[in-house]
Length: 386
Image (tube, rainbow, N blue to C red; front, side):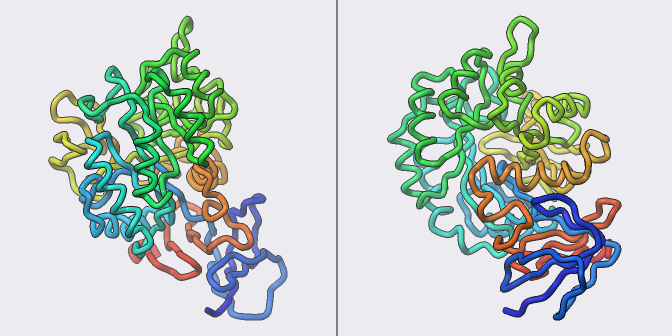
């Protein structure tokens, strides 16, 4: 593969922002950044910015497809479609379901994950089934259970070791022992869909849990006498807080409070996108539940509760910038390096640094996505905006 250099006005590198220089792309990987014009082929993106490809570590579906359909052709279509969202790596995310269904879905992804041609599958996120009912959201409580390490180990074997993150409610029986066992395997444990008190959530973090699932949503709220799960998310420096910035799940002011409290280094922008992402308004499903999608939100037909989102991750980045609660550099980092690091895949994606695969974005200063690269190859171009 030939090597070349990218010229642009601004580069969002792992070590900070650089302006007006040249970034080497060598055999599909990032090389060094230099200020002086080098010898060799130069791809000129004057007036443009270069950012790392985004990493969505919590996404259920896109373009009419859902991970729980157990149809890998659908996941392949998701993978290609996500390039238009600036996403170059993702964790297909399951929903609470019966053990056999989860077995089948997990085995399918574990066997075929390398076949995707768009955004790369860097792992699986198991969202459930170890939750509690009060904050069930769009999860089916009929399948809830206590965490079981033997069940998890079976799923991990079926997945060929691909499970990178699993969520649970810390008040479930045996949660602490399960957290300790799973984290020893290098799997990140996330806390969510839970009624846990502040002390229970803090104890789970002490046991090794390191992520709060879509913070504010699906968890006990902050109260001045009982800080709850939200208080624990804010007051645990070591844990990363997921955040859905679509303007429906979390008020911009609440998002700003969380980001300021956690800092951008511990806030991961995610989508929780379901199959209606990238699709017109209408009737859809999330897992076994009917969902109505309109006015930018997906809600359960039965009770109007939010049921995932239709957010595209690059739009989440733009939102936090437009809401004036993060700089462009911070917003990009919260949607790339921070989520990658939270699930221990920052050695393969999430930043522009020498040696990593050259997965990157070309954007305009007005935060318009123009082009998405994978391994140094342009794989998506926004023809309308170029």
